[in-house]
Length: 464
Image (tube, rainbow, N blue to C red):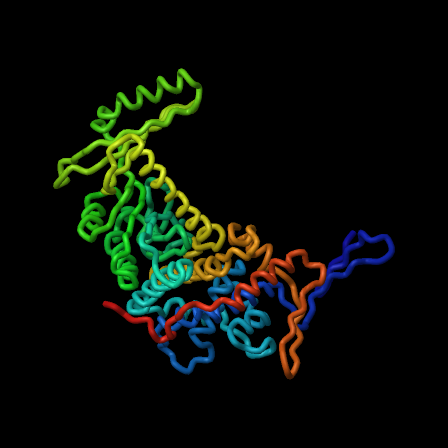
């Protein structure tokens, strides 16, 4: 039987000698893959500018705001999503280096210190943090478009359920999801996959609550960079309300929004669905037919274009509608084109999956609503930082397209011995580690990254 002592574990499966496992008191890490991420962060000045958005209520404290921001953001990237994890990471050498300390330097912030930090964010801080998240998204768009914004940008809006962990402020029971929750709003851009805005809302908020103001906050930031940019908005039926039509039409935005079915729409499309059913009966192949028509609800000031999709397959029938103000949408083929573009907004749901499951953004377990809002911003920052790092054609596809868990497996979670001399810090990885080529490729991306002009850390204004 294997023997276990206080300081070591002995396994007996080898025939001639026991295998003894014990902890090592030296400078050893299991997260050496965070170093290329930190190098990329240095070039982009990402966490530096994020920390500059915060007000230091206790200047001169032992743990700086920047140090604690980096602890939390890089901890989330590495899978340490909770403040409690940092009690065990205070003396972790890589985390010390991330926070600009020597591997054998002073300990990092403890869980109580980080909790006070998360609870100390002010309303003005939140305004700056939201603007920072948008601004870095605009920078990403400019980076992938040779320094300037493209002529057209598509924004995807979505709401995500976030299950409560206890008795957090403003978590209420949502009957549709059958749980106590928060209901954040997410705005993302599909070409960069950057989350431009993550807004925490109470648990029974309507999907569209505050979406008009948040949308225009993003649009105004885009237009400040390029006034003539054409912005297209996509969202599901939870956002298909007069409020959203009005804000889009009043500000020169095009939109394609899901539209809930009703008896009148079903009557108008009976013929379309009948043709789809008949086509499937004749061919045995899924039938997918489209129709465009002008439609006006009682509270609409004018008629708007509605695209109907009637689908019939072995599993039954499916009738869906979208409303749009895109020009030249009149024929069935136009309807197919508009609807096929609309369903690409499903790509934005991957942002929610990566945030919630890959980076544990659902870990909003503080009691105070503001502290949980700040946590959501930190998780979003962790996502945006790693997403920007891996968005490069020279990187392996598994890094470019993989989930955050894949990034950890192939990059972050690698053991290393750290040797500090008077001249340098040497990080020694295992010679047999299979992902060394990937590590080198990511490190090259981080070291050669040179954004056109990252603003100074102090340039994070409060616009309100």
